[in-house]
Image (cartoon, rainbow, N blue to C red; front, side, top):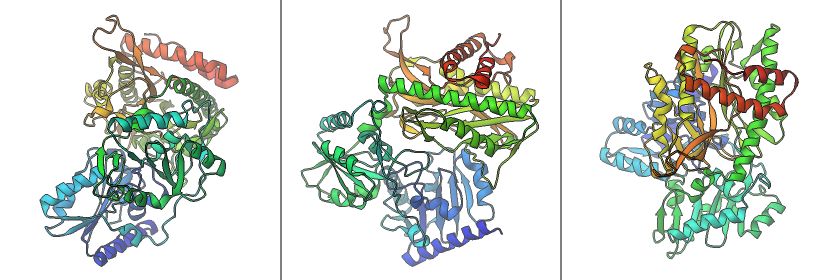
Length: 605
């Protein structure tokens, strides 16, 4: 048993001791913080601390006799490796949104027994589901215990980095205007107060940014708005005095981070509080007095920030051009170096690509940890090379690179796959099927208001036709110098909801994939902007939307099996490459320009 596994076993035993001491029979440790974030500050990485599993999504359940980690197919191989020898069983979920661990809990607990979940990190919607499901099995839910704290002696504190303002011209909409739009939405449901806990909503609404989570320019805070002002609950010393003064001018007062619940508890019975049940925790909801009327609906800011303005779209296009220029510089260096016989590892790809981005104007940092997966590692959708575990790029095969940057004018996310050496016919067929999926969805027109999950099958159809599929979603929303994963739209197999309607200005990824475990992976990803499209019918059947492809970087053509490509697909690819050449040519020179021109030559049918 290695040191890591021994430590994991000890931590599981410690939390079992806490179970016994507290008189409960099981604990659920979700991947969550008090803001229900996707990426967590260290303090709330309890599931990772206890299990050793480092994937960004997953839930841990520990009973007095069993321990199980629930993860979807993106993480199965990673979880199996990281859980080996730990006594924790991997339970494979069908999707990241699955709640099948609730059924597992019901099966492993007896009537009258108790499940503990920290209510401060338990989403309100999930709490409703848990209580209803467990009640049928006679299991009691306790949400007043933080058993992770009992098992984690050296638990990190709150992040302390200072926040800063996102300023014009890139901050194209003022803080006052955003607050006014949210208050207008509050007025439509006669809400006197509105609690905003999701950190990207708080950052967007106040035109502030921070560094409390790696790669996401956000900060830990809650915001309670009323009809004319509001309180920002944030750590002491995190807001510089000049920023605090400008916030005060817009009616936003600072308060200690840990006083959000206290402020809710002080609301009068005449108050009407707007909360988003999927974006607020049970602990905060229960802080409001019983007499306060509650309106549950999606945060207005979540809808507003998903619809980028024309000015923001212009800055995003410029950020994409800078990002594309960095990619050209990197790939020119990469290919020339390989041609000279120099050795590269996955770590070298990460380091040098990040350096190329850092040289571009407006660059702030990476938008997520770079995924550079050679051959079998490319079959792990959320793979990350580390100094302890990485591959050398040698021989022949496929190199998958999924990367992105944070720029003052936008957030980028791009995946490309590059053939190295002599690839096989099977490589080409897999690559081409995925490319056909990317192109199919990129060309699609659809009525405004279409639920985004309805578009998912369009990208999958070329793969389905060959009996293939992939386990992750096809597309996620992307923030504006904010989180690289943003709602409410999701091109996936998710159950469609009204908030997922596609509207002009939304930025979304298109990223079908194909993964052969132990061999290779293929994913081709661009970001696209929803735009209104004129049709021959002139709107007789309603307003139609289409996609403007924002990402600017050549798509490899050497790995294409032309016998699988239709003429219209080749025409789309040639138009795309003509745009890439036109937009990037002024931004690169020397070897990068030569690489760009070579890689954007038209493909003959």
